[in-house]
Length: 290
Image (cartoon, rainbow, N blue to C red; front, side, top):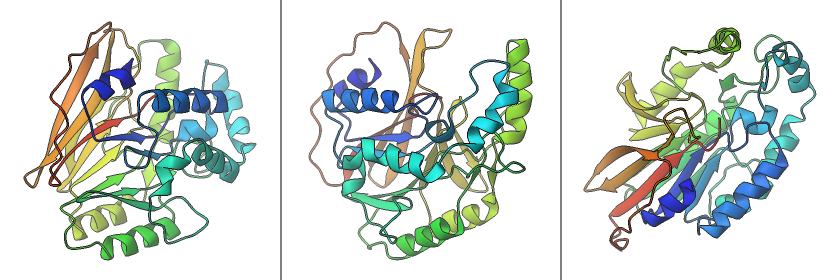
């Protein structure tokens, strides 16, 4: 329903900032691939994706999983999970530029006069620093590649956008159950992006226009240290019978953000046909399942 609604808005490009699956199942990836194809998004010109922690490690499903989940994370083949994820959406990575021939992250993709830079912020399992698979960090190699890619940007690029899964703001979780309270306390300590300071420095040095991310279930635009961020939240049906999606309009040197709450059920109205001007692009940003 959501992809149908987005397609009817005549967007130019769909951006997914991770957590397409809830429990790292390939069946969910296959289903989502078919949905993308059905609505015309299965091409590199129309789709960009970065991976989330749920796509690699899955997530806690019930209260008792809190005690067994770290062992599940330890058994995950991290590199294989990343490769499998990419293999379901090869079209999204075909027209990208890479500095490392064997890694799909960091990637750079040019859409008209806009540069998208995609990162994998999901840390590998660690008994001490990442026991639940939900902490994040940009590796030294990714950071170096991102620096080199941004340094080589052509002069006619007007907009620079970074795609990453993990968040940069501090959000207070509001659980509504005992399990939610327990898991909320766990998440507070295990949903961190480490070494953010060097990322802030790089974002400011290269005048990144906006950073799009997911991970935290709150759709919100915010600023930190003079850097602009947009959180995709989670596009799942909630108690308000609605889903959230972010639209970005890139035109006349500005990025305008529209955060839309889609009521269910809803009937989308056709909008005017997509403009062909090179200096205009409309993006949509979503985190499919968290």
